[in-house]
Structure formats: C-alpha cells, structure tokens
Image (cartoon, rainbow, N blue to C red; front, side):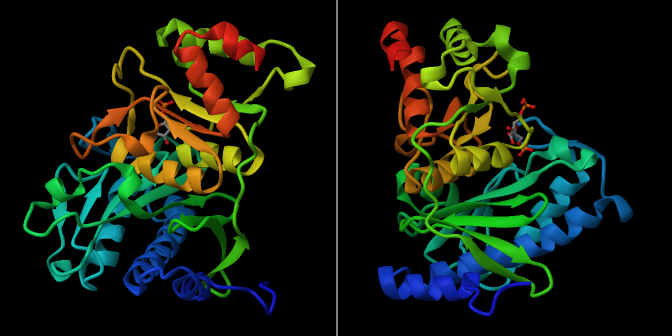
Length: 338
Ligand code: AFP
C-alpha cells in the first residue's frame, strides 16, 4: 500500500515542469507512456491465460521472429498514441517503416520505441521491458524518417519500463533519472527511486558468453581480466545475463556493473538497435552518472543512418565502460592497472 505522502508520476512531472521548465506536452507524453505500461503490465501478467504466449510466425524489420506479445505490445503502444495528438510519428522495432500519426501532425515530438524488449523471455516468465526515447522534431516539412535521424544527444526524454516482480518505470527529461513503481491497487506509478545514481564501478557483467569465440580478441582478453582473481579490484566479477537488456541494464544502474553486446559473426556491426534501445538507455544512464558507448565512441554522439541501425553497445558504470574501451583499443596494459 502506498504511503499517504506518495508522489505519483503525474505529480512528479508537474513539479519538474515548474522546477526545470519541462514542457507540459512532454509531461503528457510521459504520462501516456505510463498508461501504455499499465496496459502492457496487465497483459504480460495474464498472457499464459489468454493465449498470448508463443510465436506469431513472422520476422520483424531486424530479422527477429515476432512473438504474439511483440505484436500485442506494438499495437497497444500505437493505440495509446493514435488519437491524442501527442506525437507526430513513431519509430518502433516492430514496424518496418516509421509511422506518421495523423492526429499529431502539429506536435513537436517524435517517439522511438521498443515496445517489448526481451521477447525470448515471454514464454519462460522472465523479465521484460519497454524502451523509449522522445525527440523534438528537427524541422517541419521533412519526412518523419528524415526528422528522426538525429544523434541521441538531441533526445529530450527517454526511459524504460521493467516488468518483473514489480513494474518499474524509469525516465529522464534531462534532470536526473527517476524511477516509479506501479502500485497495482492504486493503478498509479509511485516515485520509488528518486535521482538514481549509478555506482562508478560494479562487480557484475552481462554479455552473451555463448558468443565468446565470435568476439574480437580484445573483448576476450577483457573477459579474462574480469574473471581473473584480484581482491583489490573485486575480481572476479559475477556474471548476470537475463536475455532482456532492460533487466541487465537496471541491475548495473542500481548496483553498478556493465552490459555489452559486441559485434559477432551473425551481427558484424552489432545487434542492438541504436534508435530505440541504445540511445534512450544511454541518456538514462548518463543522467545517473554512468556511461554508454559503442566501445569506441559515446552512443549519444552517433548520428543514425537508418531507423533500425544496429551498433555495438556497452553501457553501465563509468569506470567499467572506460576499462572496456581501453581493452578494445588494445591498451590492455594501461587498462589492467586501473
Ligand atoms: P528484443 O526482444 O527487443 O528483440 O531484444 C532482445 C535483445 O535486444 C536484448 O534485450 C537482449 O539483451 C539481447 O537481445 C539478447 O540477445 P541474445 O539472445 O543474442 O544474447
């Protein structure tokens, strides 16, 4: 039961509008994302009871087989934004092309979204996520695709929802990262993690080690470093990998650590999607004092070339990400001393 002084997502956004001149339109978008998250949380919880587990049979734009819940989540998000004029367009993992939203033609905002992150977890009751980034339209008159292909540093808000033993919404509008836990009885997201700070260094790492022999030699050396024993640097790091980026990232954000998805044989330019996975999470993590990179450059500085662009990704505690970059650049001796 929420305490009587609980702060709801809407109250928090109202206060942020006054403190930091966050635009009311942006607040309304975030509140609507909160609404969509409640719809998704309800459906994810009962998916096994209403025939929504399993594959639908088609592949999405980046070649993944779609689950029934992928399609459901995408439709639910579109429905949540179709009639209220809040956003002019949407880029979604589940849509081959960007979607123009007629009711939002005069809105200043565009949304990039992964409606359901971690689809391999749907049928095993594992953690799931939703990831979103909000951008201001660069110019009117261009196509949504042209307008949206801007570096992540131009996002005005971003966040994620994690569906696990509780449903948690974390957002930033450029003034810190804040987390809200869904109180199901009240039907409200309640502030539970104010001004999240990512520890400078952690002792967890998340990566698909099944790909170890497909990774660059420098990354294999980095794994050897992490799994070596040295009490002064709290090694070996412990491995945690859930199959849902949101879940692994959330652990790093709260307890410190690192998540990485380097290029491999089947994904020579990386697997994770810049616009609706990497850039939004990078904004959240930077706002909490962590960092996010391709291994070579800051994620938020990368200018997308296409809406479904896939890139190498590393995110988490600032010192851990810096060390990964050192290893990748071949400066192992420098890195190993830090
Ligand atoms: P989707 O479920 O949105 O396609 O994303 C899953 C994901 O991008 C990310 O959440 C996981 O960390 C990663 O893929 C898992 O990929 P592998 O199964 O290749 O390790």
